[in-house]
Length: 230
Image 1: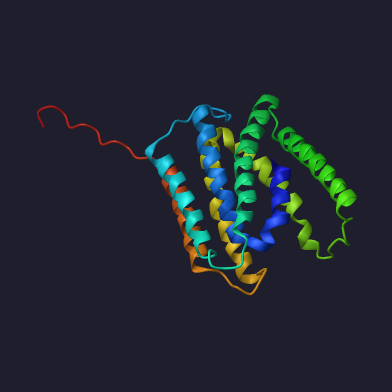
Image 2 (image 1 turned 120 degrees about the vertical axis):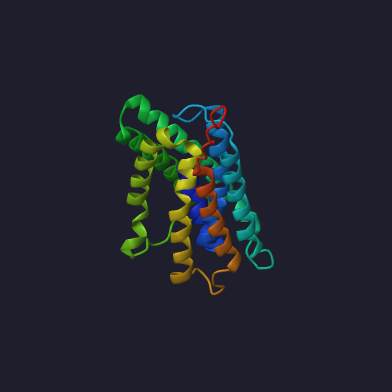
């Protein structure tokens, strides 16, 4: 699942824009998190549907629709959204499995190491097949900061493997949305991939993603019943 996320980034992020790619991933991640928690696949056990959780998931999905709406009349191939959506579903699965490995091995490092070993093998096989049947890779980029994705990914996987048993898959997924969408918008503003700029719909979709985190995380207490005779 992690390898597929990396692959979908390479294939679609430049065409879709980082913000739109991120919001699409969030949609798949939110849906899978809600389902995985409900069936108890995550290390935290069964977490049933509640009004807040379902509403938060729906708001996240609406966020994707709003973000995409600004691109409907443009030249961006919306069919590419299928890849990040599937990648988002895979992220939810990945986080649940990593959390289970962490609990079984009693080691966050073990879960992170296994995750990246498997992902690296998948990507190496994909790269070899691409070189054999399509074309060999060109020269590697010289900008050092382009290689920070790997170390950042290691930190993210380790933190997620530790937290998922305490937060559940859905809340963990939504908890990453704020940072993801904020950084994605910043990249589209300061390091755009084209000259179209940032659409208002993308900004609104990002704000809705923030709202989804707040809604799904909210806990409402019932007011205590008044004493008899008062």
